[in-house]
Length: 304
Image 1 (cartoon, rainbow, N blue to C red):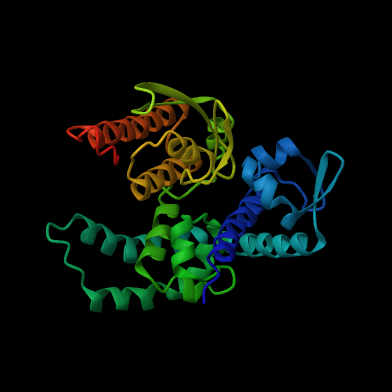
Image 2: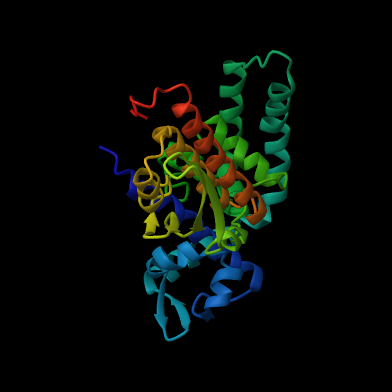
């Protein structure tokens, strides 16, 4: 049985490890160097959540400085040696891969009916197989988290197995073409900022204003007496406030919406202004359902 939390942790740690290697290469730093927290954030692209939950998997911290553990330093040095070896052959490998898989990909993506020739694809797979180690180590790609999770394979441990899939090859093509994934830290700008959540309650006959913040684990919600943490999906203080005021709303749908909103902010897809706008959209949705639930209901029923 899959341990989903552990697998998601491994996905994140894989990308962080590659990000460290890329940062060391870019700055021409040795892996035995000490790093400030600012350097870990800005150069290695660690978000606030990464510092809280994953930094100790890579670093030993002394005071305000970080240093790679012996185990991680050896592993990352191995990655950088493989990268250095591959660089010499990378230009030719890029050209061959784009000519083979790139042309197939472009024809398929641009075709009117999206016809996929499996026989041609399998021939191309075999043709580019020998290029994959050079391409992988030469580019050290960051991968979309859902691709890594769904493949269930660490690409550094099994290059052949990981790239035995169209989506993996497509991600590599994107990297070669300068459209690959990047480690963003801009999402931290939406953390711990006060947001408004104005929702109508029939109990009081007016709109109440909840104060909400996005946190590294979910949300923080406060309104009069009920204050506290929430899961990414809103369970916790937000739902407790709504239940306290007998608000009628589609809980499962709101859970889905709140978690999608948290993820969009965490991935850096939206900024603070858009986060506030979408959060209020959820509140307006709840208000609409709350009002509709009471319309036409006889006073003596008082069920909703």
